[in-house]
Length: 261
Length: 323
Ligand SMILES: Cc1ncc(C[n+]2csc(CCOP(=O)(O)OP(=O)(O)O)c2C)c(N)n1
Image (cartoon, rainbow over all chains, first blue to last red):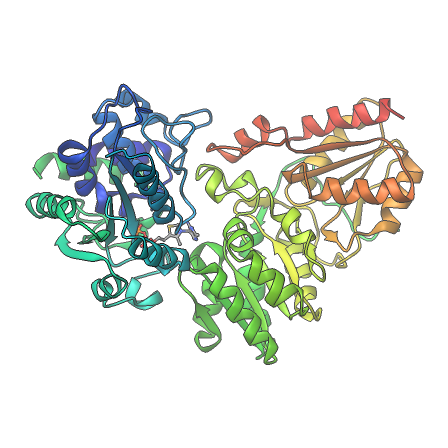
């Protein structure tokens, strides 16, 4: 997956490696172990919904969607080119498997609540997941949604927050420190669990836990590393929105080749 | 009447991006005026306000990803005597901060300068969510706001300086890519007055932003076809220079408007409305049709969505034919 992220970003010469690499482990586990879905029927009514609210991490989701069969892997290399189904940020009309057009941060949790409520209203048992980022939680709308999901006891919804401790202009501590994050969610009425977002065991356990909670919405607060898996990208915010050069891509791919996750 | 000189446009000379010019002039303004404060929403590296933040950290507020809150804070600062410059991408600031721009800034005519970057589809590969094609419509709809779209680095600096001196709300849309050089140092530009770059009697091409260069190119192509075009850089969409529109409509009898914006609510709407009222003539529009764009290289997007010199030529020929 990571290799595909690097390949597609190097090819498109633009995009967001850091936040894609920090969320890819969680997306992988979610799609392979938890999601009820059918890549051949992306509009199947009973599918679980995944909303990537941190839309700039689209390359990570595209890699997972390609690997699980929504579209051919070769398509990944068309990322961000004119006419491609793979837009710079998610486009629900163009890409099979994309549930919501995002890229303007702060909107995904509200949409996810809507999906979860739709399941309740129509007595369906599909489940909704939404992936947020820490900088994104600066947005007021996120907290309006946090309040509203708790008030409505939307328990067929799990939010996953990618706490990679960086946003665009710098670290979250410098720009708008929101610590203690878990206390905030809990005080708003959510069931919260903190995990290492790169530890597969912990991700699996947390996602299972989330499905077992009733009467409250759940949030998984995943401590992650921005740029995870590539030594020179890890915690280096230069790679928030700058794609690897051909040389860097080669180096990154060699590193990934030598490692197993 | 000729208040601006055109630099050789036949060969494309790339100069500063308008956002880079903004970053530079902001530091100069900060040095000159201690009342200037700057706010950004976690995009200061992209909007180029970071340089101001470095030079004057105590007058710089990086609000995080909170456009609406930021506009409110900027308004409060201005109520207490500061000149607030508030920046983010054009789409996020105008869309997310709109109610605050309306109630806290436009309504009380607060001294807030909203200077955005990444206007239009020349943002390129990031795609729809980051491409603002509706900001002119939103911002011209707000009473008291001036709406300005500089075409190159030089004009961005000149117009932002004037915006800083103007008491009241001003919206300035800057862009991501480097811009072709339109103006020479020494040219005098005036906020609220369009600048005439070419004078011809057959058709009047009115453009703003990156489309000014395309319009100048189009005028050259039209000349070969025996059509002499006037070209105007209408850097101030609001308040519109209606005297100029009237003169141009009378002189040429056919107009073309060109902008990196939706065909609705922008330069085309403003100019057509004025011409219809003052001196109706055939008008053709070069703008993005009623559609969102997509990801792609900026030049490819301009071609695909009909914003190049070629498209302006076609529109001009049509307008002339309709006389
Ligand atoms: C509403 C809005 N404002 C600004 C941006 C520009 N932007 C894109 S990514 C980003 C930083 C995001 O940081 P974070 O949410 O922490 O994501 P991550 O670090 O996981 O990449 C910003 C400010 C945006 N996409 N949407």
